[in-house]
Picture 1 (cartoon, rainbow, N blue to C red):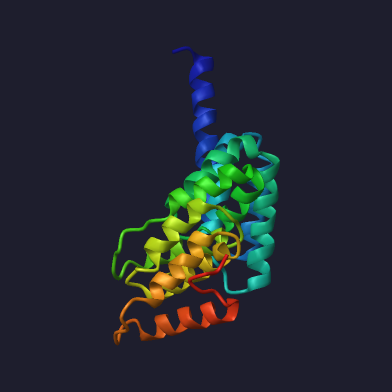
Picture 2 (cartoon, one colour):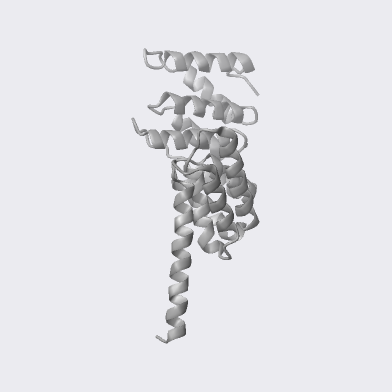
Length: 226
């Protein structure tokens, strides 16, 4: 390797380390607002979005106590990533599929993807395994179900039907909300409510069945609903 090649490698390694250092600041809860803003703008102007985008995504992994400041910083990161969507889109989709905190990646995905791509990403990212005491999994499913509630497609119904059987009550409730939204347009979803009503009440499901009854009564759904 010649001197120039060695020098280029050294400079590239220094740049990578610099970007990584700024990225670590963005997910460190003890950093100040000024440090985070400086890191965000440093990554934005660093001249290599392929290196900067993964580091900017780290800001979505942390929540700071001051809600307005937290939103303002994340809005700025979102703006930068949207301006560089070709680089950022695969990272955003991967975050929706795998990360714990996904509310902001979901917002980005909605803006970056076509509606069909966005729908597929959300549906495929739902985990319908009936797992107990997995807080991260339950939080992810709730975020995904709330996003799917704003869409309408038969694909959503099958996944929601599975998750109304979840062992986690909050997931069951989110799945029920999602099914209710689908039932406004899809008979199959209305039929799900009638099937749930037919289940025998138990100590564990009495509150849930009560909510199902209230939804059916509110919309006046029945066995002969069109």
